[in-house]
Image (cartoon, rainbow, N blue to C red; front, side):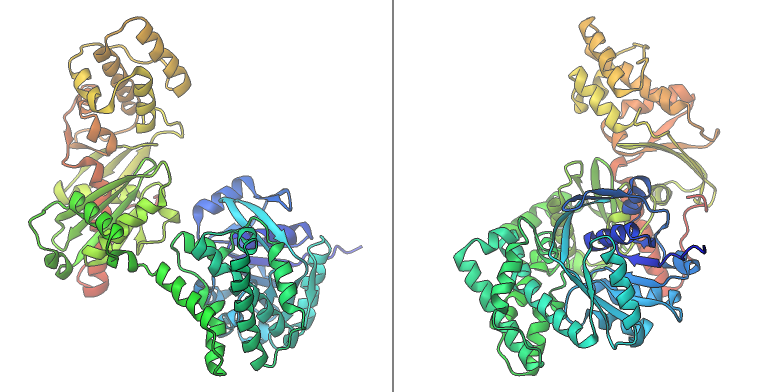
Length: 617
């Protein structure tokens, strides 16, 4: 018997909606390809699969995991699903237009009124279907979703009924794994879209503004009254669009909302995290259609404007009071030249570099001459997103930032800069501003050690990194020093007063801690312990390859706090190891330099394309 060919489905966007749908389609026997721009997320999915928790409990592996739409072109897809935020959809659809084929059906798996229209310019109206989503979840980690609820059924239908058979097949496929989905015609689709949008508009913005879960919002009599009035505004506008709801629709809405439980709607999470929202396709659409029919939508308008004000990226930098004081403190602390006027910074072209390290995030702003005018750092180990955003707001409120570049450990999932580059690129670009020509760069960071070789033209000729073990890095140094009872600020001066030559036998952090405790119990002087730790790290670095007969410089946070380490490294390599000014900021400075170079190239075309690395990076 001939084997039935699998349905091929591509899903763009790995948020909770996309991940849940990918799992269910895979369980139904489809050949599923997934695509997302977040490389860190994709790496986790490739290694561990997608994990669903709570309502569904499963781990599903995928062998087709892509970061570029072009990678899906050879798959000859039957369906292409967009499960993105509405404000990303139009640009993604344009980029995904290369996947268009005669048989391809395109599905908008996004709630909101008219979101399917964002796909029409790229694929044409006849290919478009819309899926009304009645499930939800919150991201626990990059590849894990806690499924909050599923209130069946989902609905799927074509925009103009041309794809009715394909909508039916898609629904039947999901029904095989009890992910109840009904196929409907285009007229019913419009009604269901309005129905779900009214539900979302009634609660999502309220939960975000009030920091309430769905359960908390519907448990209070005052908020319930507000929710019902928002729903009634939506019903009145929908009726002007010839959409009729049953008499008990409000009661059914409240029953649906109460089933949401201890869950933050997606839009509410975006508000809480000060991210762009989809309010224009929820409450905003009700307002838009209300104006069309001269229907007052006061509550929907209030929440639309309130959410836009709260998530306006420039609002915080304009606010007086507490926020203004925070911004002032950040700027005063980070300014390199405090004699310059604020008008100077507003009139100058400035460029921002951000080094998102595993331990600290460093910010450097330079002017058009390449001169550093602002430096700042925040701790990132505690994932303090508010601190990061406060610094960014302060920077954009004071400096005329023309272009920005992010680098470092967290660059791939950081979206607040114009470009990203590797820290190897940025280290070379930054140091080459001060020391041109062939050179070695030793960069000891929180989680890795890098040795970078630059050629005579300041390009990266080669580089080496330590293995995946954190031995010899800043994290290792901090943990071992803490076990020995030595402060980072004292360690370098202690070691400088010792002639001890013994090193740790183990680079495993657990065993090294035990060995350090033995040194302490044996009564070893603290200065000898400090020097012994440095010798261990120097020996680790000395085992890595480094080009001989080239000037060698050290950068990074470790050398900023442990300058005596360079003395021991000089002994190990039998050559001078040079220190640079502000070594902890050298990579973020290099990112700012690359931002400036790219901006000049874009705007003047007077310099060649900036490329600071070989193809291996």
